[in-house]
Image 1: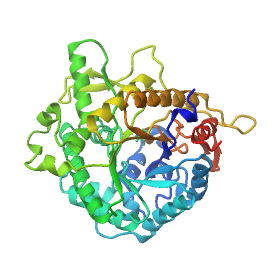
Image 2 (image 1 turned 180 degrees about the horizontal axis):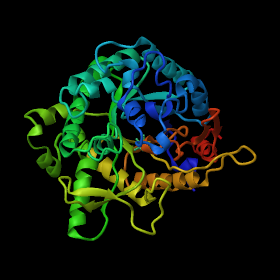
Image 3 (image 1 turned 135 degrees about the vertical axis):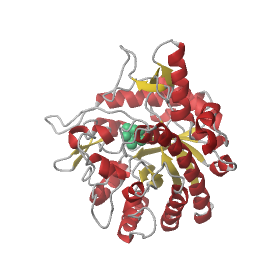
Image 4 (image 1 turned 120 degrees about the vertical axis):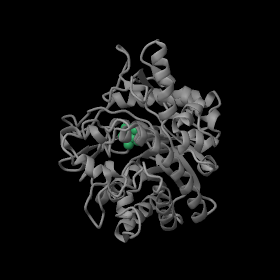
Length: 441
Ligand code: FCB
C-alpha cells in the first residue's frame, strides 16, 4: 500500500466535481437550462430518466461539503462553474444571484484552507446558445466563451488562484457530437470536427482573456483526458482505428494547445477548418497540465467516416462498474508520456472508480473496491514520479457520489456517500484512507 511518505511534503491533495453533477438547484435564483438539462429531460437519454435537477443539492449544502474537504486534509478543490447560472443566455445579461453562489463557495473554501481551482467548462453549455445555433459546432462561440471567461476572472480572480478552461474536450466532443450518447445528442462527423477546432480556438481566446483579467500570480491550465488507445484485435484495421481514436480523443486538444500544432491525422481531418493563424491563436503558454485518467480504451475499425468505434475491453481483464479496464501501468505510462511531451507540471485532476457501496447495518460505508483502485493507481503515480514525471498533485474523482451523466445515479464515484432521499453525507472508508495519506488522519 502507498503511504504518506511516498509523496513529497508539498504534494497537492484534492478532490474534483462538476457543476451539473452535484449542484442541483436547476431553476433557482435565475439559473437557465444547459444542454444537460435538455438532454436529461429527454426520455430515454439517461438511466431511469434521471436528471441533475437536485443531484447532491450542493448549491445549498456546499458548507457541509467544504467541511468534509477540510477534515480529509485536502489542500485543493476543483469545481466547475455553470455558465448558464452566471450568464443565463450564455451571452449578454449577467445573473448576479448565480455569481453570488460562486462567491460564497470560494469564500467558504478559503476560510477552511482549501484552495479553489475553477474550471470554466465541464460540459453544461447554456441551452440558449445551442438553440440559437451558437453551440460548439459554430465558430461564432469563440468570443462568447472568452467573454464568459473574462466575467469569471473579474469576479473571482482576487481569490481563485488556479484556472482551467475545458474539462476533457476530447470526451465531450466525441460523446456529445459524434456518437450522441451525451448532450446535446448529435451524431455527425462534421459537427464533431467543428467542435474540436472551435473548442480549441475558444480555449486560446479564453486564456488570453484570463491572462489580461487575472493577477499575474494566477496559474492557468487545461484539463485533457489522456488514456492509452488500444486496438481491439491485432488486425491492421483495428490498429488504424486505435490510431484514429488516439488522434481525436487524446491528441486533438493537447497537441495544438500545448505544442502549437495539430498532429498529422487531425490536421488532415480538420482540413480547411484550420485557417491561417488558428494554431497560433490556440497555442499559448500554460502553467500546468491537468490530466484526467481512469483506464485505457479500445477501438475497432468501422466502415463510416470516423473509421473507428470505441469498444469493450477484451474478455477476462479486470473491469470496473463502468466497464473500464483497470490498468495502473497504463496510468504510469500516460503520466510519463504527458510530462515528457507537453512539458508543463502535471496535476492529476481526475482519477477514481465507480462502485455501488452503500451503508452497512452500522451505518458505515465500506468501499474496498475504491481503496484498492486508488492504492494501485497512486502506486503507479509514485512510479511515474520515480521515472522522472513531474507530477505535483492528485485530485480524486469525486468528493461525493453524484450524477454520472447518461448513467444517472447508479455508478457511485464519491469518497463520500450520498443518500439521495435524505441528502445525508457519509464519508466512506476510502475517505478515511485518503485522509491518512494527506496526514489528516
Ligand atoms: C470523466 C468526467 C467526469 C466524471 C468521470 C467519471 O470523464 O470528467 O465528469 O463523469 O469521468
